[in-house]
Amino acid sequence: MYIDSHTHLEGKRFDSDRSEAIARARSAGVRLMLTVGQVGASWDSMDSSLELAETHDDIVTSVGMHPHDARFFDDDAAKRMLALARHPKVVAWGECGLDFYYDNSPRDVQRDAFAIQLRLAREVELPVIVHSRDAADETLAILRDGFGSDAARGVFHCFSYGADVALEAVELGMYVSFSGIVTFPGAPEVQDAARAVPLDRILIETDAPFLAPVPHRGKRNEPAFVTSVAARLAELRGETVESVAAATAANFHRLFRTSPRQA
Image 1: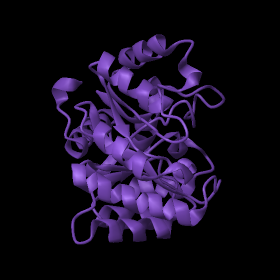
Image 2: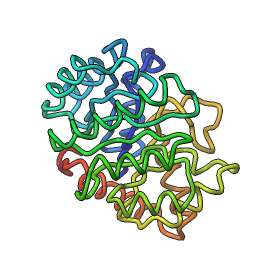
Image 3: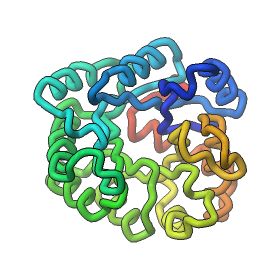
């Protein structure tokens, strides 16, 4: 079975066929999906993600503030997120982190919001879904500081760096999640990382509706396409698709403390 460890099924681009997309994922062998609950200027994404998780046994969710929206982080947002983090279908904190590519929020504000959210995640004992773009060194530094001597429990989602960053993340206790990027011909560094990371630290995801993998480039991404990510990982690592699917599912359950029965 496959698990899509990061998707955005609550997004508007699924409004016309959300139920059908979920059905297609199930038909493709996807047995569990984590749809990310995001908060910011609006809490609509969080509300919709939670509703999906409450409605479907094979969907779980998270709570967190994306670095794009870090300028909206304040004490009230933190309190509301802490309350939501205790919901039984919320299995992670995030996505949160740093995005120095778009810089939609000032970098110092992103750093502060990320560090505080790491502390909040530790308070409620949830693993962290980390967004990091063009900010590898600072992301790793904040993780070291945020977790102190404890092993950092979380995942670099939609990994976009090379093997050196991936292995340093693993040393910190992180998992590494590969998306459709690993199938792109122009992503040799990410493919090197996919070969280097131990299989027991790998997750797979779609980040749907974004980053559709080969052979679906140009289409809206959806959870069913996570099978193409698994197939490319298997090819790169010289392993079977079945072993990659089984290992990444087991890794998901271990990290997010979910039960195979939920799948």
